[in-house]
Amino acid sequence: MSSPWSQRRDVSPETSRLLIERAHEEFVGGNHADQRLGDVRPLIRDSWRRSRAGLVGADTAPPLDLAAAELEEYRRAHPLASVMDMIRGLLLPGDARESGVVVAVGDAAGRLLWVEGDHGVRALTADLGFVEGANWSEGAVGTAAPGTALTLGRSVQIHGAEHFNRLVQPWSCTAAPVHDPETRRILGVIDVTGGVEAVTPQAQLLVDAAARAMEGELLVARLRARAEPSPPRRRTARPREATRTTLRVLGRDRALLETASEGVETVVELTARHAEILLMLAVHRQGLSAERLGELVYGGPDAVDTLRPEIVRLRRVLASHAPGVVPESRPYRLAAALETDAQHVLSLLDRGAHRVALAAYRGPVLPESVSPGVEQLREEVRIALREALMAEARIDVLLAFADTADGAEDGELLRLCLQALPARSPRRAGLVARIERLEQE
Image (cartoon, rainbow, N blue to C red; front, side):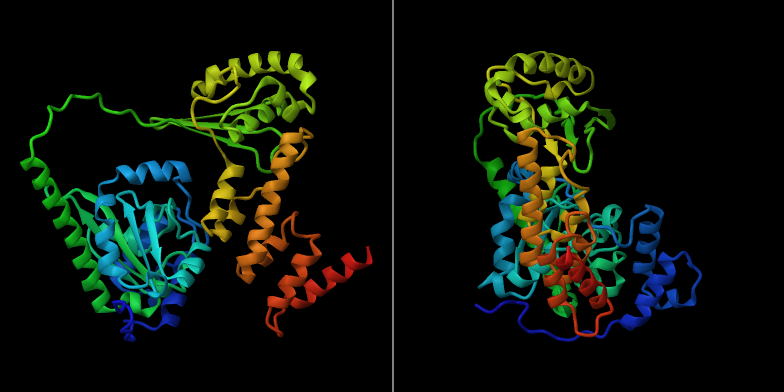
């Protein structure tokens, strides 16, 4: 079966790419009266203004709102999960890995829940943060088809340079919201991202048709369910907003514990020892014996007598600021999930979001800690970041990593950057000088 994206037709944009890029630079720079903005579509100008008013950065990567475990649980319960096979059949028939486009389905908040399609395109767009769990609403990344379609409540097409975020401007996309077939409340969004084939008139018709087909299938499923006898439903209490707790340890000797619950955020700075204990419990979710936790934190199992009073003090701190992560005993473990920014970086690398992972990497894990468990995690994160970037990242991401403390003295990394740069790149001379200096040391 041929792909619906195989018949590619060049589409003449309403303005040239160069004019839009110049208009974008003037707008981002604050010159909102520049006459070149008249060459930009009103839909795009309005979206740029919303992005600017929302203080969206023009070079920032999207936030990853859903961690791996949280994402899996959330999308299993999402109403669009039941129609994903239909979407694959309509938009990615045949070999989806060679379709030339990426198809994403997100929720009403703009968070991507499924991202599938062409292998090569997925690898390149993932590097920009176009991955499952990432937030692509207008409030997070500015003008982009998923978020703008949700904002306007209708399908939109965004051509390359029309994106507010410069990092996304090599790509074009078409998206349409998916509504509840009865209440018309927005349930989510469907997006197609790629080259010019993703923004043809045919692409918009196909995406719109796919959204309507999803709504129709949802309605049919509901009607069938109503026609079948079902046991009486019990009234349940309205679920409260989940508490989200994050431990920030990257580039910090004194970790920050951040808790967000029902719109209220609290932040507490932990002592170095409390940070080490809590980090080990966050990493070892299955729990640790007192002897093993003592080894990881203090370096020996005979440190149990020192560990226990420290646990008591840590519990007192957490009881006041984050009661959901107060450690349990026998074994020591956390009853609720505790996210860490270190594990967040690893999750981004697993999804191929290299640029976003590098931006999220604020430095080594608790850099002054000498706890064996912390030292091990610190090295795991550093090596995972380095190997992932060197194996798959683009040259601009590699150069950015080479400018960090972890990459500055890495001769192998610098030589890889030098090999990847064009012969006339102005950055070659600086790299050669750095490599020569390292070889002389």
